[in-house]
Image 1: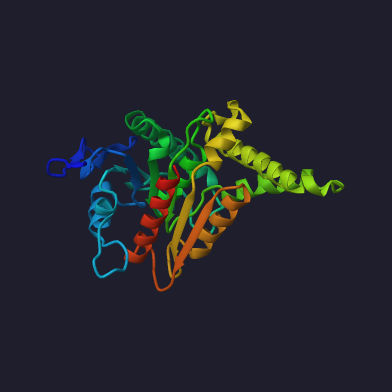
Image 2 (image 1 turned 45 degrees about the vertical axis):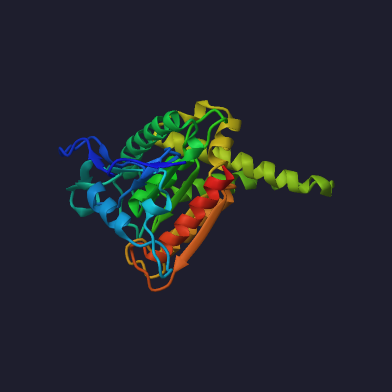
Length: 314
């Protein structure tokens, strides 16, 4: 029988401002033993772990008359909330803010994409380190979830795509709220170029058609992930195609977006969904009318349902 832990606490290892390092996370230990899962959750640009975790964990989950919280929904889970490093936001005149990576205007997400590289590389390496730490504790990365809001969700999608393993480990799940996919056009272009290479004469064997489609999608996924890794100088290109495909294709992805989001327009979320599906990801999508750049109890209820399904399948 599970037993309650001592009074739940939040740990903040360091609060010193740094312009080049992601700060140690705020950690909410499981409400009950045993510790079975870990959720690593990223705030949006300009925010921090304290504000994000306080607001998120206090928001009722679902629309029932007897609402619960995220921690009550996952009482055996540890919640980890990192704070992004302080760095210069180019689009705002190099103002110093917390951000997972620098980027230009989301009205033109394909412009000045080079601004994203350094921050995404550091954030991805940091998140992969956290995943490995939790996987060692839990025995398997399938018990680890990555999620985030806004730019945190965007960074989460990249880190999930580039989770570099040998084919025997994979993430439990990835989710993004009001997020977009950095370098989405790069991935789409790789997939399109692969399709262009395969536009020869059709195979007469109709029984092999489905296998050919899956093989093409798998190869496109491998090339896209390797291209993204090369862009960020992460070295994933040295791994085998099989491990790339296993690492990426495994975790289910949930994307949730407010239709009235004024900051990250809903079409950016839809484009991320289509892109990920194009390389074989298992993507669930929900959009919410009359919701702006934030989450809602309804959205969190859908996140919980998605994660419980993913945890049960693992």
